Image 1: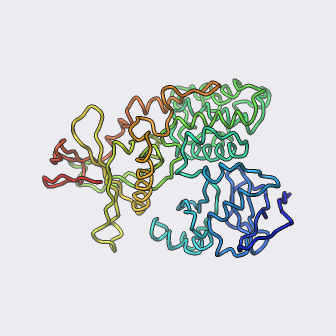
Image 2: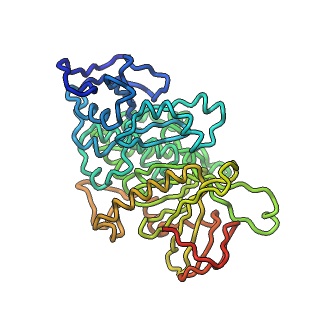
Length: 452
């Protein structure tokens, strides 16, 4: 593949880092088996299909902060604005685990200890422990203020943010109503395929590529039982939405329009964790074997969001001001069936009762630490007392049309709590903290449980 060299020949400095020595390589997908161009280069992948090979004097001593500074200081081609250091962070990611690195972390050391992290935070098998290879990626900083993100005008950064948001939509991490999925898919098609061509971009064209543009749940046609699949299938709806896209709109505006749509989602910009919740069972079903419900837990500056990835639907979306939590460690650490958990305590709209849900996860300590850091930072801001932390306020408008997703409207109408909560085992307490009842095994003996 052709490489674009971005090297500053006058290299100097007292430290062990080599300033402004970066090589950019186009890549289709991040590959853990990709080799750097030299023994002292660290590969950093962008989700916009670029790889930055950053040359350092000592790979094992290089910190995440120093690598970020080298990328930001490059002045030969990328020309990132100063916002890069606030908006993005280095992440170490694999299909099994995703970790945002702190500034002082040394990526190579994290990589060397990856199997230990997998043992601690995942259910990786022996084969997975031996074969899982993480990659170093440049992704959105989970602590970044969404209101600051809206001010970004740099085309490269907007493309990076768009690429990450698109991946989360297609993977079902950003649950969307079907109509919202079609709007986003049409924007993606316009970006990747160019202007609509009636002879080329037919429903048949999209049929074999539908998963490239739509999340799995949006690819399922609900009309086949009625014999209307060909007429109302997702590929036909996508083609119609694509047809309505302007042929003259600029690429940067399409990136921004996609992001404006995603910014309205309360779980935008979340770090995601794997967890499980006990299903409520009663009667004869309680005597039979039943499994917990696997869920995704999204945590960002706006709150905590519990998602059922099999649908996908949002089960709960809670702001921190309405939430108390606590992390509990297993009484029998050596028992693989005894897991750490995160207790969530909240009050449902229109009710005096207090509800509690228990999330079981080997990543509970990571969730607890992230929530604590976010809440500590948010409490220092005047917006802590407002309904919107980083969200779209009632009087927020851009200079162009901004369509608020149906998904966001639905979540707001439900005040953050979905009717799907019947899937969850919930314990209820009075406003004084007295235990009332519970669904599932979550039960207490007349004692108020008051997480922090």
